[in-house]
Image (cartoon, rainbow, N blue to C red):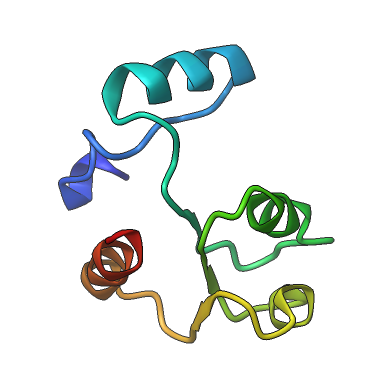
Length: 93
């Protein structure tokens, strides 16, 4: 999917933690934000972990996400990949 939106150079598939760390360090350094467009994010642990590492969080307003974020981060109501990319640029700068 990343290739379909021209994001191949910006997306790391973290199938294994060690591989993801190596890929992040080799390409752009550590992550600058956490983007979650999941429609079902059970306990929202990834969001909480990202906030614990002081990463800005952009997340799709779904299930328990608004409650887990507690007013922090940015919630999006519609998945529009071009505007999500623009939000990424504005938060990351």
